[in-house]
Length: 335
Figure 1 (cartoon, rainbow, N blue to C red):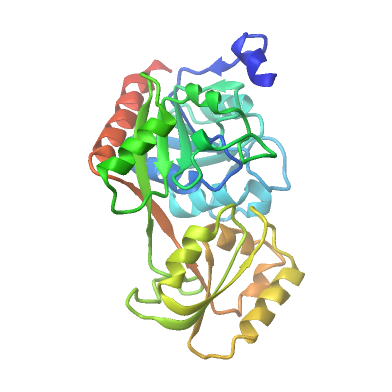
Figure 2: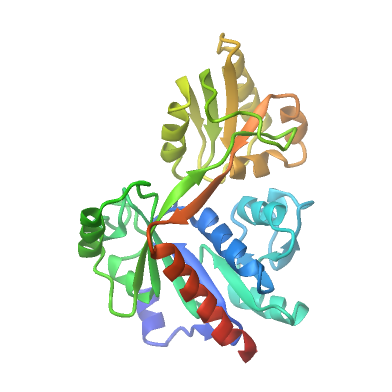
């Protein structure tokens, strides 16, 4: 009903002169929005002044806020905090009202060239200049159903709003036959470009040394992984290849850790009797563990995190980057 009212212009979508790129999905999460947003930041921040704008899911604050590496996830959310930690040359902002957030950003930072909206496909109050829709290779929206039968937040035909569709988490080795199957399933419209991306895992890194501490070729007996993300299975599969046994504890997506959770994590770790063991979490979880009152419970644990990036298949990389750069170049002078 809400989409219908927007389609009829009963509810109005606000377009902006500054380039606005939205990254989102139709499903309830786990498609890889954060690494894809980071890819866009890396691509654009070399040539343009960039800001991210998120709702700040899980934060305990309200309204418009800017953040930096000294913020906490309770203030701005785990994903914006991760952006602020990894990219010091961009603006990071949160606002549950994205229209207000864009107005604030352009007022406070008139030299901005582009704003990246994280997880905003359903935020129809803003009409982005370029809309990117992500879908998991193993859970395509075109083969999924609305909640509660499936994991879709809105009907499949809402994908028509996207300018770009990215199939994420594909295999690194990819055949033209599989690509054709994806095209036949998704059926991109004439105005839509379809790209395929895959996950690249970095080096397992100590949270204390902030350096790569485990060589890829080194195999341990047991890896203990804990996480609070929507879809931990790809990371679990990756870690299984680097150990004999994987022990995993999962928490809800964007979970804010408590003292009880840390006690459970420590007890599970202590119960693993081998000395050749490793404790690993995700970058997002690391951001939430840095919260006041929790970090002092974690600081003595031998904790590591596994960074992830994304990359594109074949000619998709150049075509995708060209489309993004051309859009920003063409529109950045309009404001």
